[in-house]
Structure formats: C-alpha cells, structure tokens
Length: 110
Image 1 (tube, one colour):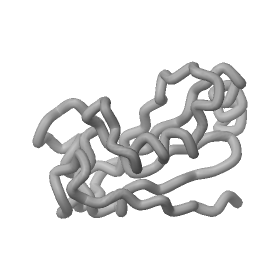
Image 2: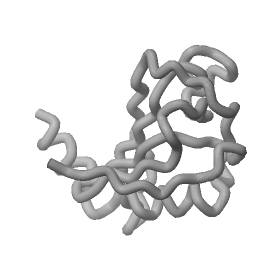
Image 3: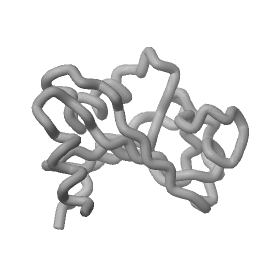
Image 4: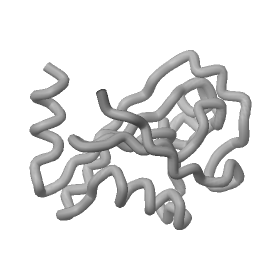
C-alpha cells in the first residue's frame, strides 16, 4: 500500500477556504506531458503558488501520493465556481508525462 506524503499549502492559496463536506471525488489528469511532471513536481507547483489559478487536494503518480490541502479545504479544480464540484469535492490529479506514468497508472487501476 502506498502511503500519503503531506506537503500542505496554506488554505489562503487559491482556495475558497474551509468547509468542504467531502460529498464527491473529482479525478482529473494533469495533461502535463513534460518529462519529470510527477506528483512531487505538481506538489511543488502548488507550494510555490500555482500560476494556473487552480488547486487540488492530491497528486498521484506511479510511485507516490502527495497531499497539498486538507480534505476540508474548498479547492479550485472543477471549473464550476462556487458549485458542488469545487465546494463539496475532493480533487485528485493523476500525473501524465513523457515517462509513461499515465499508462502504468491506467494498467494498475484495471
């Protein structure tokens, strides 16, 4: 079993604060095909102030899971403003890069 590494970001960074009841799970892929675009690089992106004006709770690659925000934080990831996607959902980003992480993760999920 893979343990979850914590690299927590301040709640004020690209979120709507706390109050997420965690009613849903939203899974995205990063669509970042740059070499080395793994969970650690995406966690670092969030820690340093994401220029994409987005945030999510977890990033996952074929080796690790890193948590950037506590589950009760309302992250900006679903594109629905103050809707249920952002306000009531845990966001998980699956890493995609040129090293083939996506293909290995897809096979593991089957």
